[in-house]
Amino acid sequence: MKYTEKISNELNELLTRNYDAEAGYKMAADRVENPELKKFFNERAKDRYDFGHQLKNEIVSYGETPDKGTSFKGDMHRTWMNLKTALSSNNEEVLLEEAIRGEKEFIETYNELLQEENLAPTTESLIKVQRDSVQNTLREIKIFETVA
Image 1 (cartoon, one colour):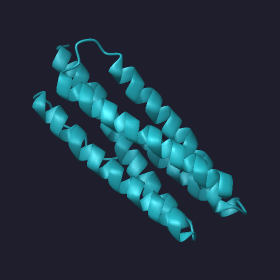
Image 2: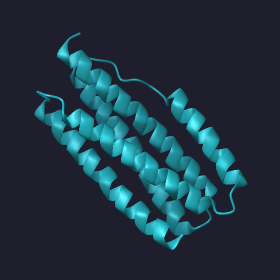
Image 3: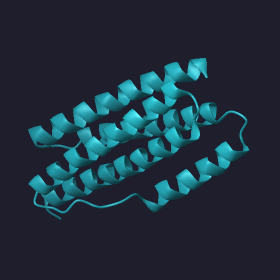
Image 4: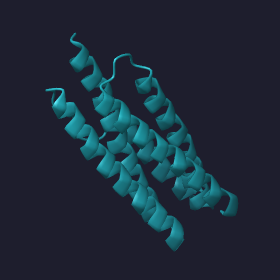
């Protein structure tokens, strides 16, 4: 496998996770009443949409084809979250806990990709910017969690 194909595959995995996160944040926004939290979740969905487009452009720059759509695992997780929030007395707390868990995993995925040797400077920069944004999101979610 060519290096560019290997990196593109890893970027495609990250792209699919962004699709999943976007769908998850949209679902969360639909499930909360708190206007500030609803706005926050919608903004994060928009961020992940934008991240996806940035990743698609990077994949294309490697001469590869971006994946389309969410993952089966992500779809199943959102189904589970729908059930869990339906049975919970505090949707906000459940959704915030899941967002924290997801963002921590996301940061690990970004960090793993940054360990790749010989990343193109544009790829490395893009991954760092997106990872840092996810880290900021995680901090914001934890603030919401303390008041939920």
